[in-house]
Length: 590
Image 1 (cartoon, rainbow, N blue to C red):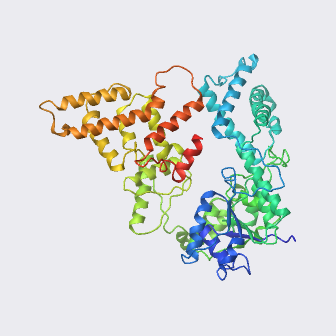
Image 2: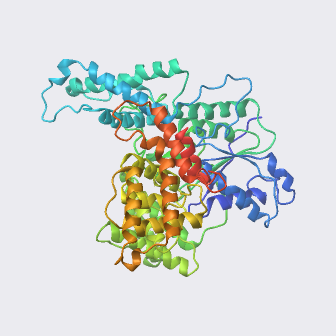
Image 3: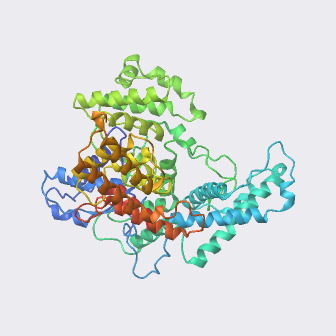
């Protein structure tokens, strides 16, 4: 039986996941449902979260809430990563299974081929357009790959927003028609050629498949509601498919929606402005062509649109969790005022009139402004502040949209052996398993550069079938006895010759003390080089070969090399693929 929506919001100054767990367990979130008294109630709960990361954090919070005792968990399903985890959303048995998502690498290569084909078919008259700027066309396969990546990014945004490509033709004034026609011709790739390519392969774009999975889940919940509570928490509904899921859950008899950080300080006039329309064109399906939203960049825009979609007023959303500290409430209010829409910025005067200097000072208590000379000083200053917090045994976090800043700060902290957890994750090529893969390829195909050689041998995942202590000792001996001498010829064959030459040289008189190595150490060095040569052989055979090789063969050889390098003395490569980074590398290579 449908009922009015049950909506909650956790204030931005209160820990979201902890508040969610506490209020679910103590019966605040769902009156009459109190797992604290009966822990066996928890498995009947279905809990949807925005990301897999949030889903991984929740079990520990439940265990803490029950005093460390073992506890049966709810069914926890990440919504935002539905395309990454096929089991995260339940598929209905009576529906045809969705086609698989096209692998990212295959998708990029296929789009690159289509971009190159478009360039070849571009009408000659398009190239003769007079302009102060030359018409940018891909000059090489590499250029086509970059353009394909940009096009795929645009496609993902359009698929996520479930926009309509047919609205493109009305977005540009007539005086730009000739130039715009070239762009439209280019976008025929995604409007016609790409759907045909996917249909031929019986595959789907990842974002389109994710939206389809979420919509199927919404339909399943509406058709056969679960017996237990259904909770969607931390999802803003900025994607049309997730908004539909939220709408369905909010109308279930045991459905609850928990929103993150709904702004209750923003006055009603400003809140209404977030829903006004500009009269400009929109590509979104179901939105009138001249009915685009006015402030999509405002932090509360998505929540405003969601509440409108749910047919709920802001006043109907209850506050969940403990009352924040008064100083934090004043800070929330100040931030809300600072982000007030431009159309209502005259309200700043009223804010200054109603808040005393003491209140404004309290809102900024503990807030500092630091002006750095450059990016390096900025990162170092943040790292020092975080380190000082640790020394005071306090918790601290860096919140920044600048990914380069967060990486610099992490690098600065690493100098003090402080490892930080980046909630946004790290690019694959900056993780330890991927760095090993990159070094292996550079070493095999680049002629055994000394810097790459030492970086590979000292990499924490390098084993070459030896115990950790032995591989590190052998690497130090190789560096001291061979690498610090004359540069070896390219390749592992040249490295073997360098080992023999260095061994003969140190047997002579007047050898520097630091370079003297015992005979048994030379045997260790020779064994290390032999193991390395055997490991690199599948890729090293390709060095200098001008022939064509299939990408699948190249990938297979690369996998053979990195597994041969990382195999331990027990014959296992488990450490290479362990953890989130290892799983990501395995997925990338398969």
